[in-house]
Image (cartoon, rainbow over all chains, first blue to last red):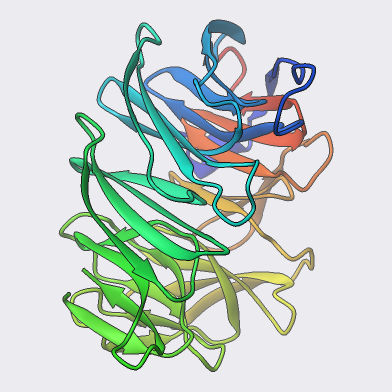
Length: 187
Length: 155
């Protein structure tokens, strides 16, 4: 833990570099998203690939290419020994669709996949993964079982977007009332 | 459904996702940042001049503030009363709090209790587009393909 006293002594340590964009990558350059120091390792989405580094040396431990490369990956969560990556399709603006892949954090082996609607944000809470996103078709929040990726429930709204947000064990989301007026709701 | 509020509200952040979570931060349809009770949706307090809630810890909620969101502010999490305002203008978009330190995308590391700058990390090209703190290190992304790591020497 870096306390205020310790932070005064902080220095630049090292850098890790993402792989270059693959030629003809469907989504183009994606850069780095969602760096996540956890359990003595550093996870990050690096140009559409999921990478695990040793932050004490900067060396790559493993790197995986999620099966769907027509997706911009933007979110990363850890649950036990699962590292979960999510993102939104880059091909269709009106119905981009979303992808979630869970990998064994030790080996990098793919454990499960799920395909909710657009994902602008994703969070893992307890036994669930919550995704939220919006596109031309509307807004959706989706709740997945973290152990197998099965969808537990989902809901549409008439406006909204990120974040995927859980407070006090309640999923906060955008919705519509019976007259079609926009709402925020807790479920 | 536990509760619903009608209008163009914007969800921002919460304090805790588990059962101990007591504060949901939203922007109301008039543009004011408010704390709601996550179980009932009832108003708890407003955050004066807050724009975007950047981070929440057990004691405070941190937000960009000022007429253009150009400052960083900290509010008491129990009352919403302003505790400090850092008036160095740079419009923070990202922040992470850990161990009593608030890290901003500019590279500034502030004492979370006072708002005083403890250290400014030598970011390559601020502001950072991603920022995370854990395991005694700070990870910052300032160029498209590079994560810079900061920490105590030897870590």
